[in-house]
Image (cartoon, rainbow, N blue to C red; front, side, top):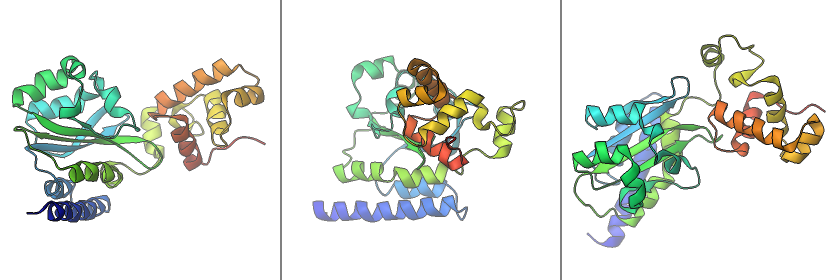
Length: 257
């Protein structure tokens, strides 16, 4: 097989993954079909697609082939792993095992206690984000023996993240039922459990105001604004203020005139 043909095969396989993800998003097929299509992009021994549950603060496996102990780790402990903040950075893209710094692997219970005993030598962990910046889940792929993943396949996995995120992620924004479960005592006019002041700060973010500009409008200090933004991002499980602004816009929240 020529290198050109190999690249063409990978690109064709990527189209199949997107089609499977679209079908899973619409409920026509299951997420397991997405993983089956992904095996045409790259060989693997184990793989899983998980959805992040912000209410239970854990991942839920939608489809996967990892052993039970590895699945349990991914669901309940992975987000506490020292390596997770590295994975969670939206700017990073996927982290391939062979590219991971050794000091991170040495500090990772996920690698030392789960992957290493399985004989895992390569693979990728890819966090998935919705269009509005919400973290919605993960793709984990592992191989036992060294396999040279072609560069086009690596690139394709990154390019497929939007489709994979759509397949695993719930609809944009929390439903009224989600808000009620998460904060039973919170007024429905305070989505996400945000305080009235946090909602004011969130509204100002939708027009791109700086911390100093928000502080002047709300008659508080820029440092206090920064603290409110940190709380907003933590409560809504969002990576940055741009994602928070997108969430506010989706909720119809905007600054007062």
